Length: 250
Image 1 (spheres, rainbow, N blue to C red):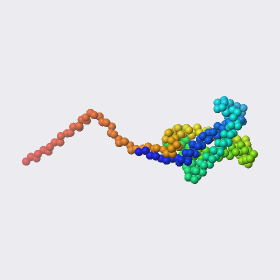
Image 2 (image 1 turned 180 degrees about the horizontal axis):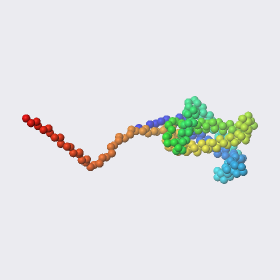
Image 3 (image 1 turned 120 degrees about the vertical axis):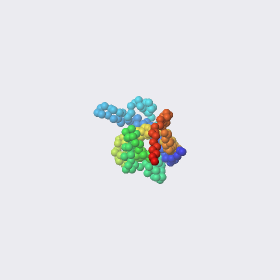
Image 4 (image 1 turned 90 degrees about the vertical axis):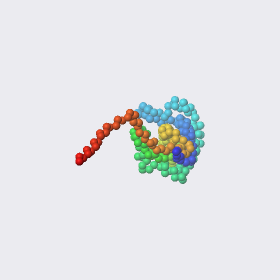
């Protein structure tokens, strides 16, 4: 008989699905802003390994010359991002869900075990729990990254009004670089997260939609059927006759 296991409360599911399009618009509009001044690249000496981003990338996404549009979208959705994040954090503390999300002293060891298993370097699957060590570290890190994005965003958008915050973050250039690195972190998390969802299967995905997962319990092992024996009759072993006792002579 199938068993229904409740996994995700309604509020968590709402916060999750609202945050997805909001964060997408934030990254897209941030790219429109970044186009106006894109100094970041990875290079060795005078040789550039990676440039963020090549002109072909901007043209493919129709990014050039949309700075004002990007700033408008970014500013509006920043408030939605903050409001959704604040409600999410508040709910986790009020409901006690934070106990499932905050890493503990076992989380890093569990994260290593999960990573080795996902890479095929470990045969034994780690114990199944609501959030394993790797998930706790990842989800908690995303929460901290959200706070960091808001702080660095205010520091570079209003560097005069929030001069104390800009200075605390290392200055305008440092705050802008930190904001950019956090954005790359979201993109990296997105691809890893999607890959893990695909690997976990449909049941895990639909649990974030419906809130529950249908698990088919393991039934009893079917009775063992003896292997068919050879149909040829087995010759009985010859039985030696037992001699009758010799009658006594009178």
